[in-house]
Amino acid sequence: MFNKKIGVALSAGSARGLAHIGVLKVLNEHNIPIHCVAGTSMGSLVGGLHSAGISIDIIEALAVNLNQKKWMDVSVPKKGFIKGNKILKILKLLTKGCNIEDLPIPYGCVSTDLATGKRIIHTEGNLAEAIRASISIPGVFAPYKQDEMLLVDGAIVDRMPVSLCHSLGAEFIIAVDVSTQISEVEVNSIFDVIVQSMNIMQSELLKTNREECDLLIRPDVQSINPNHFSSAEKAIAAGEKAGRDIIPALERVIKGGSDNETKLTTQ
Image 1: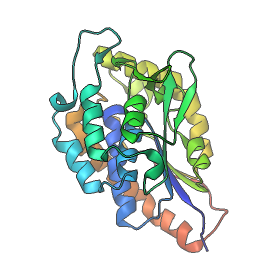
Image 2: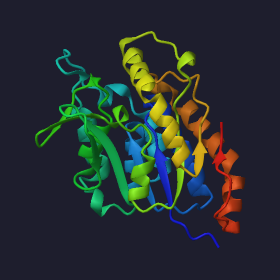
Image 3: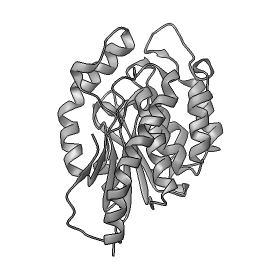
Image 4: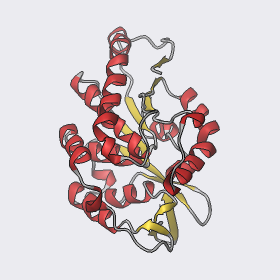
């Protein structure tokens, strides 16, 4: 009998990361028991809202219908083009100001201390503030100041936090990777330059992350520009397809209870 605690690790990916919604939707539909969730950047946002008990349908509706003007407070770039105050306010409203340690599903996310380069793990404290720190792409969002730290996107140090999932108690980890091949990305804007630079820095570390998980889901998001949040429906659909593709094999593992299954993956 399969009695391992299942954890989900959601990678960074900007608009491509909205595919996480589709994957979680499928896991919920098939009653796959999720013990904990770990996320970085967009993965931290989707995973955090889900762990707070917000339904996948509501998260999907927010992704599809929320106008960028509602959360983008553009400023003259001193530390970032977007101040981040609007998105923080929205996150606090959605999560009702809750703390991570009080969530119904154990959760953690990753940010980076810009001053020291250290990987910062958020497993307690205000959920909205932790997400705000984790999504702060350098140069795009202003860093989030917490205590003496200047926090930016966790993707700099840990794009897909599989090890954090382990520390949250997971014994079988489903990792969702929305990265794409470097050669297949078009670079047309400063946002593309920043995101592509981070992708290159993380490419080798991602290989290790992929090896550490038990099931790897890779939604086909190559045609989605990471800056185009208007492609939410397309990204979510890609996540749903990838999730459905892996469900038969995942259910066999759960029902069969085998500890010796070959690693499962979608491409």
